[in-house]
Amino acid sequence: MKIFISQLFDKERLITRLIASAGYSAILFVLLIFYFLISEGLPALGEVSLHSLLGTRWYPIEEYYGLLPLISGSLMVTLGATAIAMPIGIGTAVFIAEVAPRWAREILKPLVEVLGGLPSVVLGLIGFLILSPALRVNLNLATGLTAFTGSLLLAAISIPTIISVAEDALDSVPRSYRDAALALGATEWQTIWRVTLPAARSGVLTAGMLGVGRAIGETMTVMMVTGNAPVLANSLRMLFMPARTMTATIAAEMGEVARGSVHYHVLFLIGIGLFMISLVVNVTASAVVFRQRKRSERILS
Amino acid sequence: MVKISIEHFHLTYSDGAESLRDITIDIPARAISVFLGPAGGGKSSLLRALNRLNDLADVRSVSGQIRLFGDNGQTIDILDPQTDVVALRRLVSMVFARPVTLPLSIRGNLTYGLEVAGMRQNNLLGEAVERSLQQAALWEEVKDRLDEPAAALSGGQQQRLCLARSLAMQPEVILLDEPTSGLDPISTSKVEASLQEIKNNYTIVLVPHSVQQAARVADHAAFFLQGELIEAAPGPNLFINPTDKRTQDYVEGRFG
Ligand SMILES: Nc1ncnc2c1ncn2[C@@H]1O[C@H](COP(=O)(O)OP(=O)(O)OP(=O)(O)O)[C@@H](O)[C@H]1O
Ligand SMILES: [Mg+2]
Image 1 (cartoon, each protein chain N blue to C red):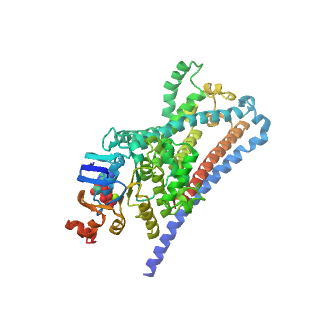
Image 2 (tube, rainbow over the protein chains, first blue to last red):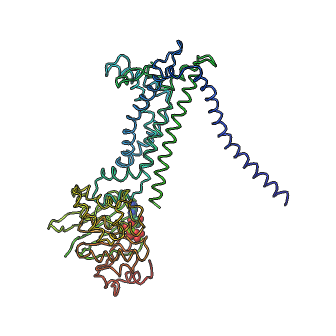
Image 3 (cartoon, chains in turn cyan, brown):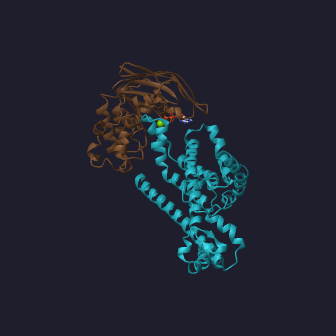
């Protein structure tokens, strides 16, 4: 009997240890990645002057390491994608959750999931073969490989995420809220606009942030359709010209750069920048959601 | 005077079961009518038919006729698909079992219905806020915090706010579906008192949460059992000498 208990005890301890080590190793890996990024990227700050890093030319072969074109390219493509994806995504979510008849909902919901599961390379291919020629002809551009093309595709990639998260949020608004608003003589749209959406806002906000997060990190599609010309975006017209994002730069150039060279270090510096940006987006998102939740918990309790 | 006349009303949900069968009853104006009966009797379904809130539920079919005699002399055919439901719901307001405050301030909750109805003048809105809160016996408790979120009120206050919200619209009929089921006795008596207060100006239809409450407030009472209207009578009669055995068993607490 005594032996049995101590065996049991050992087993418990073993399992606890295993789980704990799995947890700690996750933290360890993140720290290692961060350390690696820093150790490969920070030397760039010593090798290239800040002045040149803030330059407007990215031409590594001749030692021009201006990051502004890449940063502005990323910003332009991402903001464009967000501006397109948010209204469409949230609008569709409202339609599916609130307006669509049941049969339409039952078709649309799985369809959105399927869209969300499309590998981004496939979307990139469609963008490259169909969207970009169509844009070139219809908008009368020199090339269809532009920042705008990238924005459109990134929007297509993030829309399914936005829809399904926002739709869940709307769905979880109690039926009684809608009844109450309708019973006061609000129309269906007034109810959606003034009651259902505000009640679901933290979820809808999360949906938007997740969508933006996907758009920032996306590499493949962007590389395939934006034309990859590192030009500083200094006017709105640049949206319809080729652009180069930070992610695409790393992906395109990392393969052919000499390890330990200045160029190599600068690419890692860009990586640190991306890491920081997504950190900021995520922290803001969770802070906003957390604040909202705390407020609504206080309110609903 | 009859406010709402219900004739041969049937209602079937999409699962096929007939939830209300051949209901015929008149609801008198400016009095409190109660619909009582055990769970599943169809009281809520009937109430929700009166302002067409059933439109949103899985209703397969309704038949019969429900007419509302408006104060302006107009007769509204409630079940007619052509009837403007938004206008109807402004005349026939509803308070639910669980207080549902909208995610707005106290004032915002009260003015919401008026604003969507197109009222913009701040002085009129302010008057409506004070008047409705007075009627619902809530004014003293909240007059200094009208801009706080409504959800910060206690449950009993929230329910009176919901009543005030209905009153702010100055409807002709107020439907209340077990409005005090989640409230303590003190809040309950406050709600009942304000119903007594307002019944001279409004037609009130109440699904009570207990037979005792029904007996306390009813000017007219109707007993529903499994989708049928068993018996309807002026207030005390139904409780003192019911004609039907089943009504008697229910009001005497032999089943619930
Ligand atoms: N949305 C719905 N879909 C299908 N059936 C429903 C729906 N709402 C109610 N029913 C059915 O209709 C019948 C009457 O329900 P109703 O809610 O009107 O009863 P009630 O008298 O209000 O009961 P309670 O005292 O429990 O509130 C029940 O058998 C119920 O199952
Ligand atoms: Mg009910």
